[in-house]
Every structure is written in C-alpha cells, then in structure tokens.
Amino acid sequence: MTTSVPASFESSTPHANQTGAGPCPSEPTEQWVYDTVQTYILVISALGMGLNLFVLTVFCCHRKRCTVAELYLSNLAAADLLLVSFLPFWAVSAGNRFAWTFGGALCRAVNLSIVMNVYCSIYFLVLVSMDRYWALVKPLSSEKMRSAKFAKLGCVLVWGGGLLLSVPTIIYREVRDYPHLNQTYCSLFYPSPRAHLGFEGMFSAFSFIIPLPIISFCTWKILQALYNRLPNKTSNQGKDNKEHKATRLILAVLLAFLLCWVPFHLLRIIELLYRFRVLTECRLGAALGVCRQVFMNLAYFNSVLNPILYVIVGGNFRKKARELFKSSAKQTTKSSSFSSRSTIIKSLRRSVKGESG
Image (tube, rainbow, N blue to C red; front, side):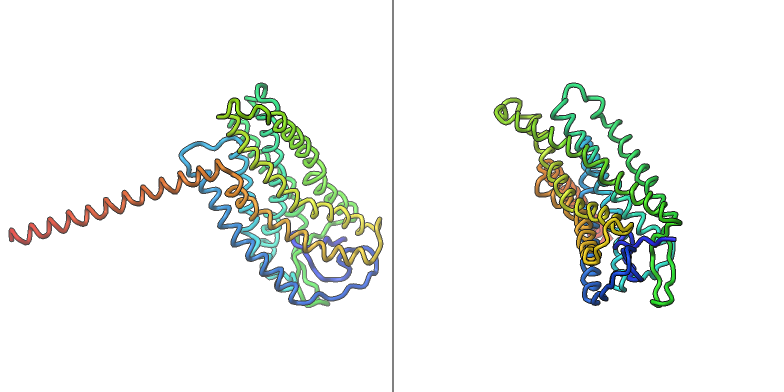
C-alpha cells in the first residue's frame, strides 16, 4: 500500500520518506515554518471569504442579468469561496505540523473542496476563454454557443465533472494513526502503486495538461483579434468597448491563474517522477519539499487575487458594484425616512390625544 503525502491537499505528513523515492535523509522542519503557514492560510481564508462573497453579492443581486462571461466568473468566485471556507481547518492542522484532529468526515470534506476548486476553476476559465474567443474571433457564428442557456449548462457540467473527478479523494482519503510519531494524519492511501500512478496521472491530465492548450489557443486568438482591431477602435465604439473591457478582465484573471497554479502543476509532475524513481537525486527531494509548500500556498492566493482583479481591472464590475450600493443606500434612506415620519406621526397623535383628554 502506498501513501500519498505531498503537501496541503495531498497531506503533508512528516512520516518516513515523504517523497517515497529512496532512503534520502531529511532534516526536521522548524516549528516557526508551520506557524507561518498557519497564519498565511488563515489570512487567505478571511480575505477570500470576504472578497468572494462581495463578488457574488454584486453579480447575484444587481438588477441586470449577468452576461455569459459574468456567469462563468461568478461560478469561479463560488469555487474560490468553497475552497477558502474549508481552509481554516487546514490552517489548524498546519500549525500542528499537519497532524489531523477533526475526524474522517472533515478530512474528506476539506480535501474535496480543494480538489474540486482545482478542477472547477480551470474549467470555468476554459469556458470563459472560449466565450471571449467566440465573442471576438467568431462573433457571427457563435450566438447559440454564447447563450445564457448554454452557459448555465456548461456551469452544471463543470460542477458535476469536478465532483466526479474528485471521487478518488473521497474514496482514498483517510485518517490514520502513526504510533511511532504519536500523531494522526489525513492522507491519501492508494491500494497499489499502479492505482497511485493512475489517479495522480489523471489529476495532472484533467486539471492541467488537457485544459492548458485550450486556454492557450483561445488566448492567442483573442490577443490577435484585439491587435487587429486596434486601427479601427474608433468605429463601433459602444459594443466593442464593452467587449474589450470584459476581455481585459478575463485576460487578467487567466494570467493570474497561470502564475499561481502552473508552478504547482509542474511540481506535481516532477514529484510523481521522483516518487517512482525516474528521478532519484536526494537534493531534488529536499528542494521539492520546500517548493511544495511555497507553490501550494501561492495557488491558494489565487482565490484572493481573482476578486481583487474584478475591482481593479473590471470596469463593468465596478459600475455594477456602484449601482448596487447606490440602490441599497437609497432603499436604506427611504426606509429610515419612512420610519422617522411614522415616529413623528405617532408622537403627534399622542400629543393630540393628550390635549383632548
């Protein structure tokens, strides 16, 4: 039986030979490292929950219906919110040197939320990049593909597919005691090396190798279309300007995702080669242990960075946010004014009754 123990959602148990590739000596990690990781994850969780709730509030409560791109982005915010809502449990575990004290159900739930975020985020970006491709490169032949009905169906398929691909996490994620370490860990326990290689390969394929070329192709075509339209940017300013604003936001979100997640995915491929002794250098194993923590926590940061980009880059989003909060402020003012008038009328009625009495 093999134990999968790369950091964070693959667990980070310090038991013997984390990487599983030969008798390489390992030095114990200082407690301040775990404390730093714990603080970082808690900050990411708090910021991520507040910012993504704000994004969902703007998209869902605004009087105008979401565009297709906004529908995908709101689902991306929901995937990020799912992740950061469960991260505090992992933060507590990190501060305890990744020992697990919350039981088997939360062990599976926390890691399921993280794995689903990995799958759903990348495929919502696939959908949104395809939407921008159809809008800018093939605007005349893509009306049906850019309908709200198609977008909603796409979102349902992404959530369903993310859950289906996360089934190995539900099946093989377990809490086990390690008496020689006097600790309990939440880890993946595959039934055989073949199953380990198969499921880890499936994860890398469906969360990185397959979607990345699609996103890259669409992004390249989008950039070409934007470049070709530069000389004519004064014509048809209305709709084109709106499309360009939406496209700039999408490109910013795509770039942020690639910067935050590509290092992690590349590291997982190298770790898989190291675990199955295709790579055997002990110094590489030590470097992987450090990079694992850095790159996984960089990936978590993407859930905070996305809503920040909506505010900084998303002109349409800022406009919606202003309109929503102005509308809510007016309603608050009206309700307080009505309440004040009611209070005055009641006091006048009491005074009139007192005088007549």
